[in-house]
Image (cartoon, rainbow, N blue to C red):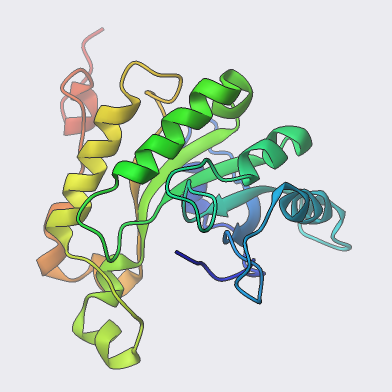
Length: 215
């Protein structure tokens, strides 16, 4: 499995996912392969993460990264070497789980749980949120097919994968991290994707269901 190299695009403001302090995290997207499709290793990620904060005339500190997978390129379920690089450079992370072209995310979740066992809070404390998939709905739509965007997946799979992720992180250092999905605006206004855009709120937080929190 391969992903495109780092793109010079700021992280979406949604990376912060409406934290109580409304912090805006600035950074870049980074795949797990180099331009020649060879696997990135820790030194490659270290170079990226060390360069981000040094950008001249940048509008603030760029010290976050959005990843697309938890898996080291060309392995089955080895944790991505970006994790150790992020720890070494104190780079915050929007984790990504690759969801297209598959019927399950078992290997993604195995890599994530292995990383938690290996790095503990040094890793978990840097995680801002988890994006289950990236533009999968767009790629699987008529617009995506017309654009030749590649293999996508449907809303039912994304919802299932989100639930699988929440189950996997329950009781771990990541259990309170926001879990969601990143896609194009055309996907969010597409009524066929209602299942994904519908809020998934734990029963223990009634105030987020529109009910007033009792004092």
